[in-house]
Each structure stands twice: as structure tokens, then as C-alpha cells.
Image (cartoon, rainbow, N blue to C red):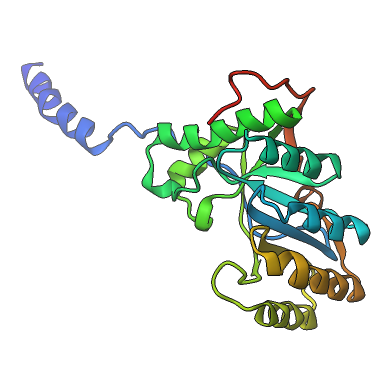
Length: 246
């Protein structure tokens, strides 16, 4: 009996070391980088709301098309509020691009939550919606970003085509990129554009809309082209008060 107790005393510590407790894996948010519905194109626009939003929206509406806007930074000033409301009221999808356009992979969990929460809170106040899509600045994310996004009910939205309008492409180069893509006629397209670029709003976008529709594509929101909800909740917007500030 004594020999058996001595055996257990030697064996059990060994078992404890060789069989460590496995930590529960954290759930990760979904990442989408393409549409799923054939013949659909999602034209998305980052970094607003900016002055060219109106012209972007008018070009889309005139073509019976829907866009998706990813807003960031303070959106409580009167002009920004009007632009956000305009986009939403004209049928476009409104989404989050975080509050300060910081690389989320450099932040702590609490700071990532804060970056997302501030935009969600602002959009709830201004138009009464909690977005279901978040585009990480620079397309940069890691598992911590996905964990926080999952907790917040957000889908990470990337892209499979970049017009190049924010990285130095001229309007002619952006148009050529669209033409080359359309010539290949992929089943779907999820395009990255920036509403802060005047030439995107007034030159490249009208060209892209015309060529995409000529090729038989349907221009829809990101939510429609992926079959996912655009918003986590929809309610009545708030009334401006002292909490509407950056």
C-alpha cells in the first residue's frame, strides 16, 4: 500500500504538467471580402461623411443603385449630421469605419471597443441604427479585433477590388482598373472607393456605374450582396442635446 501511494505521488504531478487546462477559444467575428450573390456589385465608400457624399448619392440614385458608406471620425457637427441623414434617407447602407481611423491591431481590447462604440452610439443618435458592418482602417485586423467585433455584433468588411483613389491612382488609372476588372467579368465585385476624393465622385464613379451596368451587374448594398443584415437594430433617431459632441 505504501509503495502504491509513493507511485501516485510521483505520477500525479507528471500528469498535471502533461495535461494543462485548455483555455476556452474566443469566438471570432465573420470577415467578408466578397459578395456572395452572383452578378452583384457592392460599391463602398470610406472616410466620410464628406462634402462629396451628396454627389456620390445622386449618381447612385440616378442609376437606381445603392451604395454603402463607412463613416469615421466625429460626426456630430451639423454638416456631418446632415450628410449621414442624407445617405440613410436615400436608401444607402450606413456602416462603421471606427472613430479615429487608427490601426486597430495596435490597440488594447478596451480601446478597440471604444473605437467601435463611439461610432455605434453616434449613428444610433443621428439615424437610429446600430450598424452590423465595420471596416477596419487600412483593412488591418487580428484575432483580438475579431473577438471584440464578435462581442459587438459586427461583421468585418474588406474588399476584393481597390479603385486606388486613396493610394495615388489618377482618375484615368482608376477607370482603367475598373475596365480591366469588368473585362474579366467576375461573378461578384466588392469595390473600395473613397468619398473624400473629388475625382472619385465626379469622374470615376459615373464611369464605373455606366460600365458595370452595361456589363449586366446589379449595384447593391454590401448587406444585400452578402445576404446579411445591414443593421443590428433600427429605432427612432434621437434629438440633438449636450451629449452630441466628440
